[in-house]
Length: 115
Length: 115
Image (cartoon, rainbow over all chains, first blue to last red; front, side):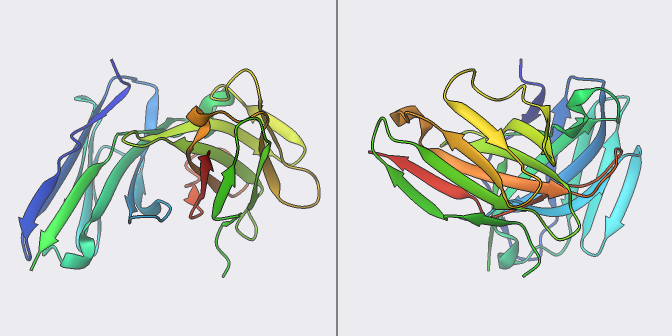
């Protein structure tokens, strides 16, 4: 079983739709959570990061963490064609031990927003 | 551009040759991480380094791969005697000093092709 599971999609939505991207994880040591966006032939770009259960909002993006269910989500409101990319969830343990630097990624969800 | 700089962007090697990938972290960052992205797979952690120190190499293959981050100059990921299976995109990330939630910022990667 993978430590982090993410539906690879692809996901296709019309412009203006609300997009929901999700990851589940099995390792209860994961305490820090990140979402990255990756365009084709580019590196992952950090979108949001959090360590608390609950919601964190930044513009059109909302990150949600439910540690009791080991489930995280990213919501994109008013989606735009420029949001078309691969979205990666990533997580890591709290500080302590040598593995605190290691990010474990989901497989990535391919999103297409069509005009 | 104060971002993570990787070079070369593309590298072609024949089987049995050596590949050297370089990474300069963001200004003010002293921690460097290397990840590998194989086709149709997610990003996999390889190694975590600080200046002159390997913190976690749990993701490095046991043979042919090595990494360093010298006191002066960029971090180097070295692959000796490359084989076809080494073809992948290799990404470097950096973060500032300290433990806790220090988000990692990625470069645009080096795409290694083995003939």
